[in-house]
Amino acid sequence: MDGSVGRLTGAGMTDLEFDFRFADFRSLQTHMARRLYRSNRAAYGTAFIGVVLCAILITFAIVVNLYASRRFELFGAHYPRSILLLLILTLLGAVLTLIPAVQLRLTTLRAQVSDEGPLLGHTRLSIGTDGITVSRSLITTYYSWSAFQTVELSGGAVILPVDRGMGVIVPATAFAGESQRYEFVAELSKRIEAAKGSIAGDLSSKRTQ
Image (cartoon, rainbow, N blue to C red; front, side, top):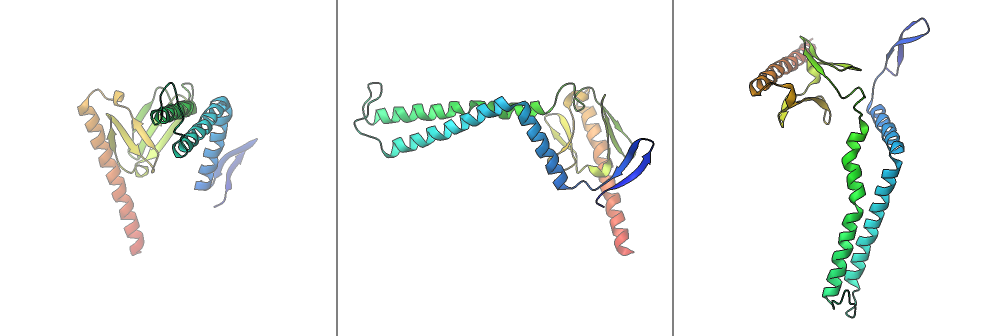
């Protein structure tokens, strides 16, 4: 379906139904990336200038290496040490110009979320018969068991992948000890596998009809 209004009451809409496609997801990511850029324009500009300078310095190093003069001297050093010293200084400068870009890359993830937003803060994870509910002060998300692909452990945290690059994390601090963590993982694994078996059974029965 392209889109339809589910119900209208009073002053406006209460329900909408639509297919959320990859194109919509890409549009969302593009919009949020532009929004992030606008709020960090100075940092992006500095990083871009640094990358350009790095390219110029590397090009200069290549030219020096190809067309080095035997009469060139640097800080009292003669050829070929003078050329090697110049190349070292040039490449060191190229590395230093990338520092703003590296810093931007390291802070990009932090810039996307705030401590006051709906994604961070005190969290309650409730295990139900049909799935998991993750509740925070501003948002509550429900996942059916069939939404999870598997259960994984990483650095003491429990990871529940829901897609190729997205998932739910239960940090190590949520558990009193190893036994509680492994008991939690075992319980989730059992329920996820049961959901997979149920889906497989439904597909098999549909094929035989």
